[in-house]
Length: 351
Image (tube, rainbow, N blue to C red):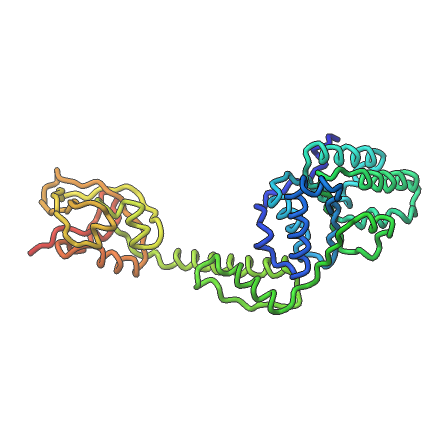
C-alpha cells in the first residue's frame, strides 16, 4: 500500500478559529499556540521551545477535528490526517514503518500532522493479542517520533477516551485541551450562526440541547433540507399556468428579479401576429430590462405572420407578478400555439 493511500483527505472547507464555538480557556490557549508559531524566530533567539504537541480530548462531535483544520488554515500549513484506528489495523506488519514515513513527510513539509483516535495507541499498550510484539514496536516508534519531532512541525492528537491513554504518552503533549458538550447558551449561538445562512422562512426548527455541535449541525441541515424539498414540491404543484414570452421575460436577470427564480420552458411560435417596437418609460421596467424599446405583438390575422418565443411554466402568483411587470400598453390574452399548447401572451392592447 502506498503512503499516500493511508492519508485521509477531506473535501470539507476549513473554517477559521474565530468561527469555532470554543470555550474561553481553549480559545486563549490556541491563540497562544498560534502566536508561538508566528513568532517562532523571536523565541528561538532565547532557545525557547514552542508548544507543538497538542492533545484534544473530550466528547465526540464537539470540534476537535475542526480545530485541527482551523489551526492548519491559520498557520497556512498543509494538514496530514491519520485515523489511527483504521491505520494501525490496516496492515499491522507495516504500521511502524508507515507511521515513521508519515512523520517524516510532515517534518519535510513542516505540516500539521493530525492523529485521530489517538486512544488506539493507548489501547494496544495492553499487548493482549498474539501480535503484541508488533504492537509494542508501534508504540515505541510513535513515542520516539513524538520525542524527536522538529519545532516547525505541529502534532495534534485527538481522542474521545483520554483516560485509557498511558501516562507515558500523555506527558509528551505540552498542551491538553478538553472539549465538553456545549451548554444551552453556546448551542443557541451555534444554532443562530447556522440558521443565519438561510432564508428566514427556513429558520424555524425545534432546538435540541445537551448534544454536541456536530449533532446540532445535523439537526439544522436535516430541517433546512426538508423545507427546501417541501418548497420545491409545492412549486411543482402550483405550476398550472403557461406564459409565452417573445421579449425581455426571456432574460434570466429579468426572471430572477420578477419571480425570484429562473424559469424553465420550451420554444414555440405564435401565428397571426407580427412584432412592433414599443418605447418604455416605466422606470421599474427599464431598471429590470435595461432596454428602452421592447417588442410588442400585434395581431394581423395573416397566416404567414408568426412570432418565435418560449412558453414558460409559471404559478398563478407569478402570472399576477407578470401583470405588474408589463406596462399598460399590453394586455394578456390566451392563445393557441404551433405546438397545440394554450398559453397566456401579452400583446398590444386592442383599443
